[in-house]
Image (cartoon, rainbow, N blue to C red; front, side, top):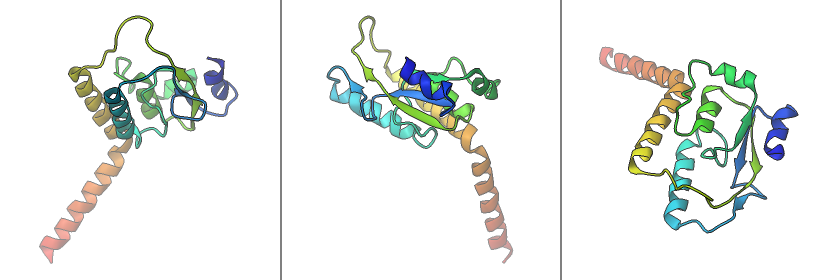
Length: 152
């Protein structure tokens, strides 16, 4: 915990993520190939939103002031709350800190087809939140180009 909190507490980052995918991080057990593929796919889909090597991680740290920037926009019931905070609170810089994930000592994975669907819906909302101005600008430019093409 201290290693994940240190960059935030020392003012080096607004948000830190405990990551399996940086030097010194990893898994303390063998993960099924299907789970590895699912994790990599989910990470790739989120990469344009948050420049973290492990945005799926639920092990993160930030400050109250950063959370306040997302007040009214952050969905606290979101599937991936760390990703939700990184995007909606406009966290920058984000720093990945190595951690080693261990096998679950109790309980079981929550992964299901329903959660995949919820994750994709969350991503759509996060993409819109982060890039809506760009989408609107491109739409207006296309409308302008079509107007020019029709009038010429």
